[in-house]
Amino acid sequence: MSDFDLLIKNAKVATASDFYQTDIAVKDGVISQIGIIDCNAKKIIDAEENIVTPGGVDGHCHLDQPTDDNSVFADDFESGSKSAAFGGTTTIIPFALQPKGGSIKVAIDEYHKKAEGKSFVDYAFHMIITDPCEEILKNELPDLIKNGYSHFKIYMTYEALKLNDMEILKVLSFARDNGAMTMVHAENDDCITLLTKLLLESGKIGPKYHAVSRPIIMEDEATYSAISMSELIDVPILIVHVSSERAMTQIQNAQSKGLNIYAETCPQYLFLTANDLDSEDFEGAKYICSPPPRTPKDQEKIWLGIKTGVFQVFSSDHAPFKFQGNQGKQIQGSETKFCNVPNGVPGIETRMPLLMSKGVLEERIDIQKFVSITSTNPAKIYGLYPRKGTIAPGSDADIVIWNTNNKFKLSNSMLHHNVDYTPYEGIELNAWPLTVISRGQLIVENGNLIANKNQGIFLKSDLPEPAKTLDKNNLLNRLEKNTFKK
Ligand code: DUC
Ligand code: ZN
Ligand code: ZN
Image (tube, rainbow, N blue to C red):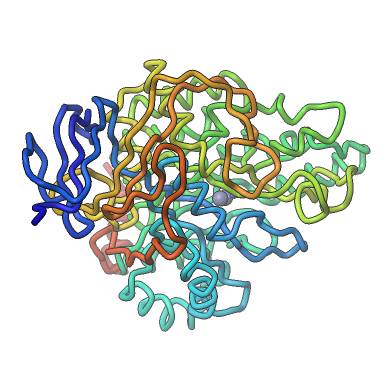
């Protein structure tokens, strides 16, 4: 009789707080012991003193999402989750989108149908709220919160998605009342609309003008606006895909005032710049995402923000559109105007290896920071911790054994997404997951997929925050007191 299902020997385990050599024993999909373990197990893996981290939690990726322009997300749950697994991510959180005027419950039911039996890794859902009407706020969302959907994204831009300030305030009040987490896409829509019009009138239609149409100034302004509304309602928010030093500084200032503002950044803001969009041909469209990649100085500042703790979360924002064909970047042919090119870059598989290579191994950040922003913090902020996000007794045995001794050039042919390019083609890396384990099952072993596509299960999210009813008197008294300060 074996004591354990799996025993990992000689692991150099990193968590958000520690880095130490140990063995890990797994039973029934859960980590049962950590220490020097000399027992039987059905399977024993010698980690050979390689770095071992918790499986990644990708807190922001888009799979099989409906669109309003006939473009098609290249990855569904099958290809997206396979790609995630190869890159060391064992939990994904994509988005169930409420169509304007439609039901979120129906959107979630439909999204479950898209995911069921097709995911190689575990998954939770964010919601995207596009229409916070009475019916949604009073009837649908309270039930959904109880049933494990406790975080949602709102947009300040895009015609089909954006909320006005009154709607944002309603959503934030709801989040406070219910202990939910609101993610905010912060860019000023009117400004983007105006600049787009001016650019088109001047015949400036190429991919690089995407970056001109969505300037740092208006990310900065929208970030400050979102922070101010969060301060007014006194509720935490998370600003997603922060791209610039100026937006980051708004967040840093808010945090240093004691406000609960969380922030996410993504690989595209560390490894791409606006210059990547500036090509003679249409190639620049490969790098179109929103907010756009910025300047080399912004990149350096974003690294610093990761190191100093301004950012809690490092997500892929995997938004996969093919370069070739008419369902992706060239939706209106090879001269598609910048404003009609589907927004997003792929990166679900490269998120963790890029940060391990360029962040940890090149000593920009330590391994504990790597674990906290790729796994522990997103698990905590989205109500999945301690089941996900750490290596500890009682947690799911979601584990990555890394190979950090093999220098190679990244190429799209190595990847498992359904996209015909990677924005990081040719970048030199020296880290890649060797073995990936999900709830005690090996899903990738020595670079081979050995999981079934029904391995992944839906994860209900706990409440990320304590619910704090918005007391009208309290709010008004607070404002009155601040207004008439002596
Ligand atoms: N926002 C996202 O979160 N992802 C892709 C494009 C966008 O605008
Ligand atoms: Zn967004
Ligand atoms: Zn996104």
